[in-house]
Image (cartoon, rainbow, N blue to C red; front, side, top):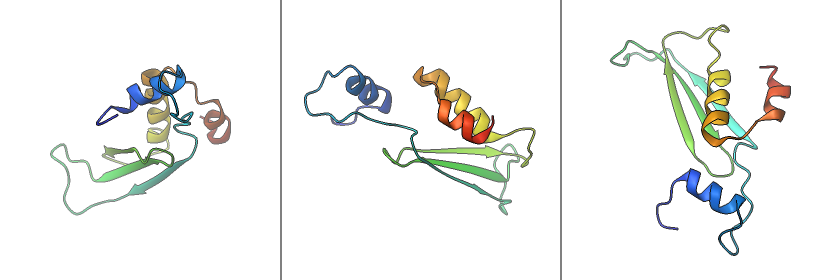
Length: 99
């Protein structure tokens, strides 16, 4: 598939458009890490990072933030964005993380 983006590969798998393409299970297992504060802040003054890696695809997201707070849960924001962009409800994650 060359350099097809993740959304295209997911759609091809879901609609069975490519023979032999396995059923993809994105976001089934996520590896998440929070780091900071770092010594050099970003241009906007953000010193903390939130890294998410999808175990199946190894797709990686990096979110930077000013502070670490329970009120601004970066995982909750990430889940809502993924549900919207993929039109895919992450029910199990909602139940486990009590978002």
